[in-house]
Length: 506
Image 1 (cartoon, rainbow, N blue to C red):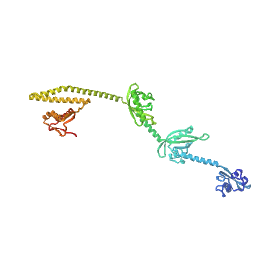
Image 2 (tube, rainbow, N blue to C red):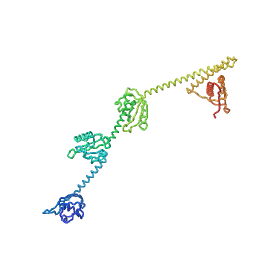
Image 3 (tube, rainbow, N blue to C red):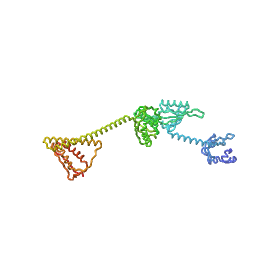
Image 4 (tube, helix red, strand yellow):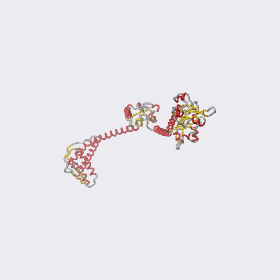
């Protein structure tokens, strides 16, 4: 029937062109009335009606208020309709809903427990993680308090902390052991903060809890490990040190005070190379640089270290590179006092030198005395041989024969002593000369013939036909070796026979 300028502009017509237009067609875009039509409701009930709906022909959302229009006699003849454009409001509501959905998604994706309480400790909301922790869906948690989930003691403790936060209006961090839905006791690291209204009124608090049970166990295990390590370091008789790449001491175990007499404060930030004996410093620095260049290979070195009283202590250190270890950041060395060992080694060296000197003196004495005795012995043997060539009674001949045999034995003993002294002195030299083997063997048999005859032992010489008669070597040494073997054979053969067999190896 009539429309104001705003409606005419919306319909894109002049106000005078409005009368006679179909509201359904030009506003709702249909020839039939829509399902929800405030005008229809008014005409059906005679009562005021409202609705919110999207009008495609009008290009947006509208809040429609339809008021009954009566004739003078109160006869219902139509309706007055007010269209209020709420498109922007609807868009903001949509954005708000999308924002709330995104916020909810973010909160539920967080692995920490998030919850909201009012001033009385009543839960107003929580995230999915919190519900899973308690084993209660969010909608069942809302409206309840900690007394509904935990034992009285724990709930009372939590409530007292909440009251303090609401009173102080300051965030607070706590650690609490809380039972989970699966029965485990878990340690929660919780941060709670009050949330305020625009006018500053405290409405309640927001809390975020994180399960730190595993981290706490790791920290405790690490602490125990550190305690054990510290005990080992404090009780160890060796010095355990941490040194920077510049040689500066950052840590020294208590053994340093016992061995060298330096306190921690005296050794703090001190360059350890300054206390090494000048004669040993270059060797230590060389090993130290090798450790820096090759971290995978521990190395050891011995050196003298200056004590507080100015004396030096022999030390043996093993070092390993831990510069890349964030917990150490240095070279770890384990140093041991080896002074007693060094003294023992020095005493052993002196004893060995003394023994070698005594042995050398003995060898020289044996060489000298053997040489001095051989001269008269040769004379005795030679004169005895000459006497045996003269006319002698049978008794005299027997005596002289025995004396010659004894002289030969003594001469052989002197030769052995002289050879032994030469061997110990490193002066034994084998000669090379041409000699005949057969006469040498016959002479040997003649020397021991008297011994075998006296014991009734038969002596046999077997010389292979292919054995050459002329050889090159040291006939004296060969005779000595064979004489020793034959003499022992005679000595340890009570009956039977002794055979000396000679044959070429090739």
